[in-house]
Length: 163
Image (cartoon, rainbow, N blue to C red; front, side, top):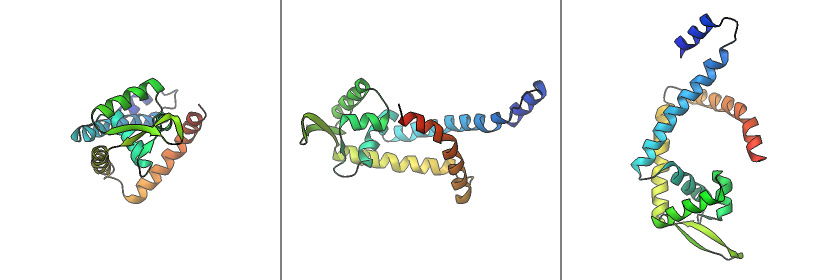
């Protein structure tokens, strides 16, 4: 990365290439993180999309169930995509559907005991890998980096929530 930035500085001294020093590194880190996440999920027989749905249910607390609409909001996918994902997770026994007692037309999606066990194991594995990725930073450095990244993401998160 340092050589890339130095080359651009030499070739385009008229430009401020300082954003590359931050954002290109964030982009490279993102690729490494995505590889580590996929590997972690694969260890537990899950795809990234399965992990997303299962963790949304897990975070909801007992009885680990949400409406398909709540799952849509938690995972930011279309209703057709979510229906397909719920169907596939139900077929593998990781979730079940049952009628919503509050709304006779609605359904709730619930983690099965097998789904709960799988998502807990996958989440533990993911945290282990992410801790390895951050091992070069001390706790205070991790907190500082987290704060800086939060500041950069605020405008994006605000526009996502308004969509």
